Image (cartoon, helix red, strand yellow):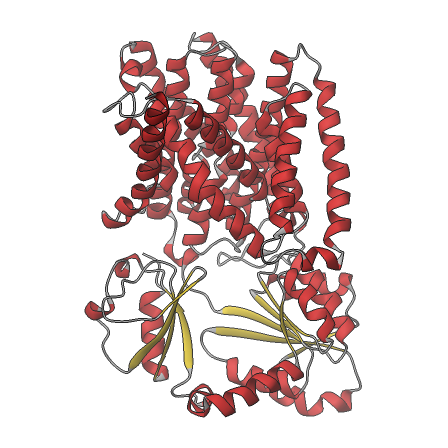
Length: 616
């Protein structure tokens, strides 16, 4: 019977995890993060609600694995390229030069941590908690899981203010995770924190081993089919570092977090990251968050007036610890931008749950206090993104032309320049200095920035590194390869490289670089001419060419094509939704971030693009 009961409880948790995002979608509650909704659903089926779930070994094991994998993905989410960004600073609309993201973020985080320490001392003096260190960690932490999707949705990830918000969250996530590990090590291993050096030393050795393995061709050949060596290596790394972390007296989550950091430093390809995200957020992590709600006895939190008073005070402390330091940005930005940024940085979740769990296990805080911390974290994750979207200036987050830099002047790129010079694209040419005679014709037609050479120093001091898309198309394949890797490492989202050496195409693609060549382009063109001559004519016609539109307007979410209000000179050809390709029909429902491939007159497509990509 016990075995049947355990399977029944697991089934209930899995079904709840499945239904939660569906319910959010149907009720159009997309402002609530899915992980928060999973905790709320756990409250309904757990101790605070119908008490349908019996805690057992199965659920405890899967929940622990979910927590470990969540910490791994938190480490993986840290993009270390943002720390070394060398993008040229631009002038803001108020005429001021935008702030330096890294130095500004460091100043803000140091202020956040100092203020969190002061507020923690006040809470200890008031008798709410006993540990200043644990309380400081809880107040100063910031949720990357809330900040990153909110910035992406607001379309400001690549702006200076977006980078500053992101960097503050990254630094807070990294610093508080390390401090939490040190705190746990001091209390559980009697102060033998030097043992943590063994863990970090192992991490360094594994990083260099990973780099060496990644550069070998055998890694690519073993990453397909039933082998999937990359995925196997990642899970082996997680379990090894988790086991080593526990052996040296640290928390297992530190080993998992370190594993994520190492994988992030190794710059994994997007397919592997997608696989890990799918497995984590599709199976293990939802179980963990649902079980957080299941275990929490919400009603016991309201029996003590002291605890009730602590809830609003902690919320105010979270807000004050972020809002006051963020006013440093007032030197460059208006009040709405500064205040909204402070609200977004107030969001906190995963590390608060980690700190509360560790504190409860060490008997530093009571189960009721642990529940209060988690409850306040949930409230912050619901409120802060909504306030941010309401307050953040629309003109800052509005639609901007795509900045394209083309390196290399030749017949292909000159024709491309002419085709892309539209309201949606801002194209700039970069070329190595040559005889004036060679550029006389081009100078009269194109805006060309001349470079002394294509060295890293020269490229990093241009606006190329501030582009959304860079096309590298010089006549030297080796130069193209070197510059493409350099620009990808500098944080450019899309780098398109001309590579005539077929043997190097697979390597560049594994680095996230898009590749084209005369050979592959001619082969694709010839195939299209043989198999689909009409489609080829469609692609070459300016009036009926294919256009890609991304849905950012929430007003169209959930709307079926049959009820679509724009019925004019347009045809929906295909819908790309994540990794899926959807053939559109009348009952197809549109979703946020769908990529629509449409064809129609240029005037109508422009109007459609303006309406669908307007953030509101």
